[in-house]
Image 1 (cartoon, rainbow, N blue to C red):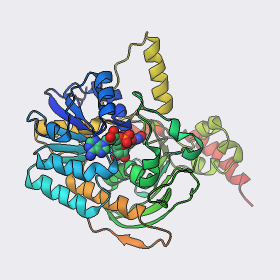
Image 2 (image 1 turned 90 degrees about the horizontal axis):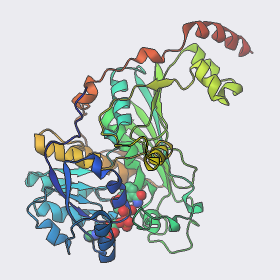
Image 3 (image 1 turned 180 degrees about the vertical axis):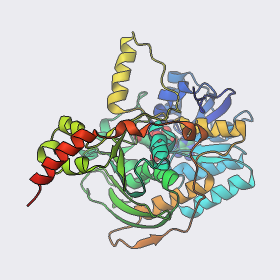
Image 4 (image 1 turned 90 degrees about the vertical axis):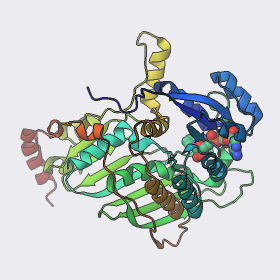
Length: 442
Ligand SMILES: NC(=O)c1ccc[n+]([C@@H]2O[C@H](COP(=O)([O-])OP(=O)(O)OC[C@H]3O[C@@H](n4cnc5c(N)ncnc54)[C@H](O)[C@@H]3O)[C@@H](O)[C@H]2O)c1
């Protein structure tokens, strides 16, 4: 069995600054990483600090400075609001701590450069969310692309339509320990700053650095809240065409006014890889190896409207065995609570956000390079800012930053996937294809 890279043998002490909504997300999978010990937490909101300390039995630091001066802390996890990212990360680096920041690292490229310069001067690692490029789903996509499962990749589509958020009463959403979802902050920062990184991270990991980006961003929902917003016109829709140095082209969309769609499609000259969402770290990956049958069958309305027919004709492909790197939750199959949890995870997805911190901890312990490397995150920061600030004139932005193309982890490279199991049946291919070709003759 492959050794799981994220099962730490030694412990790493983490201090967490910022205990709001996302903090509870991290707590929901923290126990899958026994090597990560929470030394204590800090937050400027003292009431929130008391609540999480009680709920999770954690030690409290009165101030950020108290946390930063604890010599036992190896990693500071910065889960503060976006506007505090730079200041908190900088203070942690100055205190000699490795940092894992929530995304985006900053919303200013010069600040991001300054943070990496500071980290390198001090010999520290500055890592950043999102961590979904490490998910089993992303790793499987990466492996399949490298194995040539879809031939030469030409086009990629990645959607992040969060949902029609403003009709879903976001002001009532609460985390497990009662933190309100900071919807006004999300509106003011905008869905591009909040979300585009989830797709950029796996895209850039697989396809390398971007040469130019042509994007469009606009506020499409000026009436999403009656409350005043500052700024009042942050884009809530963006679409970007990324022109990768490798020749691949990707279209990435972000919105909060479209029903949920987080789909990934990687299309090559031999087939298509797809996954329903970036957000479920064990989301199945499908491979369709193009044939006359699969390409012609989808022209028929009945096939497009029937998953059974799609399956018979190979439209959309078949499941590929997932690369397994991440620890899965421990479940008691006889426990009704765990069964419900399992159903919830399979329906709504499960993000183990802690894998990014576990990856940083593992790299500190072993001395191997950490994912994401500094130049990669700087590139993603520049891309994020370019897409958010594109506006409606669609000017092409030439990227200033670059990074060395990455190689997947050894465990992913060593995994064997049998792509032949996804080939459509040749007999059916021959028979049905002839019928379909006749049907489509004009
Ligand atoms: N809300 C989500 O669903 C979600 C999901 C993924 C990632 N994120 C990211 O997580 C980060 C935090 O988002 P959130 O939703 O938890 O926000 P939040 O407003 O609920 O929580 C932020 C917390 O940070 C604290 N804080 C702010 N500035 C601070 C400072 N200088 N020192 C100490 N504490 C400080 C606040 O008091 C608050 O408790 C953001 O970067 C966001 O993009 C959020």
